[in-house]
Image (cartoon, rainbow, N blue to C red; front, top):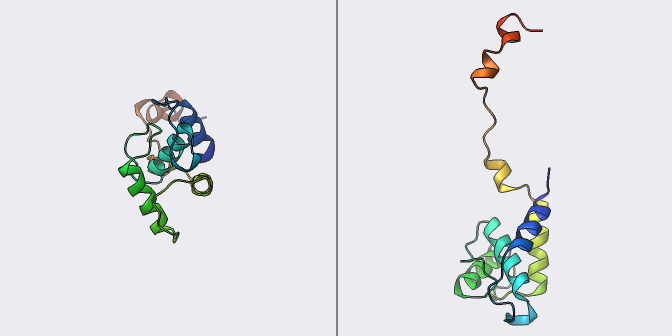
Length: 120
């Protein structure tokens, strides 16, 4: 099973950044901003488009995360917050794994020859 951190890191690495020369506030590069956007989205906060750019929706998502976790609400992304987001996602199980229904038996599993004939 792939941990949530590996899943998030792989997705963040595959995000195409639209403005490679642009640098976000507080020294964060666009790929780092895109990773934070992806992690916030995974945690249930809406950062807007995952494009590596800071905007009002990302600031609102950061402020909501900070408020929910008892941090000083600044609405700004910095390296400490980025590391905290990574730690938070790595500690919890994946939302996708929790939302997946258990497999059901299909026709072939119920009516296969060994089970119909008394099993093995």
